[in-house]
Length: 122
Image (cartoon, helix red, strand yellow):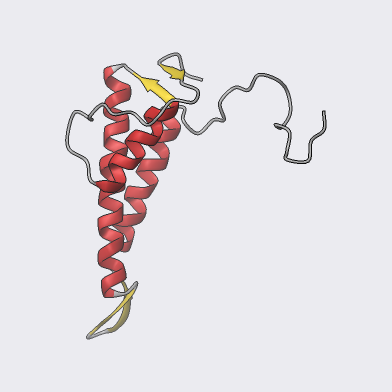
């Protein structure tokens, strides 16, 4: 885990506001990340903010694509919706940025192996 991240166990979602406004999806990601990690350095906060803004953009593009259809009819025939590549790029940016922050790794557990399931009798 990168040194600039601290795992926060069993914390409620963060109530602190991001430095710039976010939409519904970006704010949900911001709160989900802050519920598990404390990102305090300026670069980490900006990376997360950019990822959240890109998620908002991807969701807005997805809504437009859903409204128009993934394939549109033009005078030369059927074509992919022009916003598809932008949606994919925005989602890719979100995933790469979260990975760059180190948030794609599973948090450290107290012991080896998987946690016990519901039928575990120890």
